[in-house]
Amino acid sequence: MHKDDEHAHRVARLYREYGPAVYHRCLRLLREPEAARDATQEVFVKLVRNADRLSDPDGALPWIYRVATNHCLNEARNARMRRRPAANEEALELAPAETPSLPDGRLARELLSRFDARTQAIAVGVLVDGLEHEELAGALGISRKTVQRTLARFLFQARALLAGGAT
Amino acid sequence: MTGAMAAAGRCPSELDILRHLHAPQPELERHAEACPGCAARISEALRSAETFRRQVFPATLDSVVERSRPWRPRAWMLAPIPALAAAAVLVLLVRPTMPPPDYVGVKGGLALSVYVRDAGGEGARAASDGQVVPPDAAIRFEVRAARACHLWLVSVDASGQVSRLHPATGDPPRVKGDTVLPGGAMLDGTPGPERLFAVCTPSPLPFAEVERIARAAAPGGETSVRSLRTLPDLPNGALQATVLLEKRR
Image 1 (cartoon, rainbow over the protein chains, first blue to last red):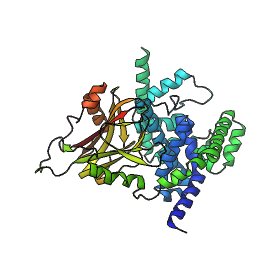
Image 2 (cartoon, rainbow over the protein chains, first blue to last red; image 1 turned 45 degrees about the vertical axis):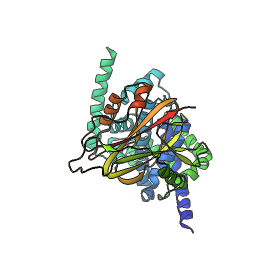
Image 3 (tube, rainbow over the protein chains, first blue to last red; image 1 turned 180 degrees about the vertical axis):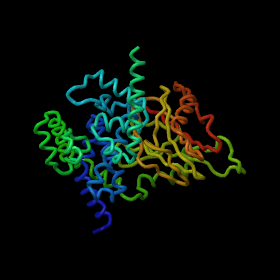
Image 4 (cartoon, each protein chain N blue to C red; image 1 turned 120 degrees about the vertical axis):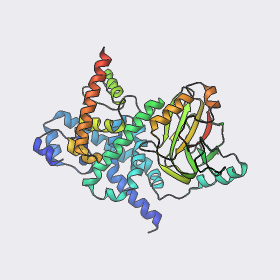
């Protein structure tokens, strides 16, 4: 088989296998099909650069979670900065799907945007995605203590911001 | 589903749901039978997976395959370069903000080239300084750095907005020589001038610092964007280059 064909077959197989997980992750964070479609391609191109890591699903899925989360949180942040309509302003549901009201969602997004990228990933991972600290630490490639400390700091500062905003 | 989840009887995390999309997890299905909230989350995930298989996969596979090939120059990148060199319209500018300690004359700097995708998406043309482009044009970048340095690519527009173009995440990459930057950017669709700056520093500069400098230099207004040719107050040894794009329908 020609080298280009080998590459195409390999990428197509991996994309078919892992693409649904990438797309779901991106759609959940960006909430806009077009933005999620674009992000899925970007994320997958990044993943394929280290295709060996996709050979073991046990390790691949936490890695996919990490790459897609970082990319999409960054996309959402850039979209806010550039006021692009492409990424939905309703991005990042920070509460279970059946409960949020629009003002709650907006408040949560505003709050989250005050923090750096790693803190955002940790807050979303624990508070929105429901990962255990250890599981999230493994997915993000950081220590469990870092997750705990960062989350505690996030909660402390978030409460302070909310308290300040309420007065 | 993770062992911890099964043992604790807790609701599945998003990572558990990603695992379920890859290979059905019987424990997760059993949990969903008794948990309407999780059943809804799983149904939503399965729907998005189906959308991927039916719509996204066929529409994007070619692009993903092409973009994930080991890098080699593509026709649309190579074609404009000789033309540009000949016409000397390649964008650029290049001088250290402050000469480095070993500076002995003009011995290099930084050049920035901007390529604008054609409407059909098949080709791209190099943009000259001040070029009129569609407000929502897709663009790519190439830099030439005479010495190794850490690169940021940002833009400022008439509203005073500073946008981070490259890298989208993480620390500024170390570049040297000719470098086609991966990815690209989509302009924001708003007509008006947008000035792009490549800033390359001997040691990594925090993005917040680049943003602060750019925002102070171009606080808003079309005139300030068009007339701003250099960013002041960059660290010693910093290189910079700029290109102005005029977004117009």
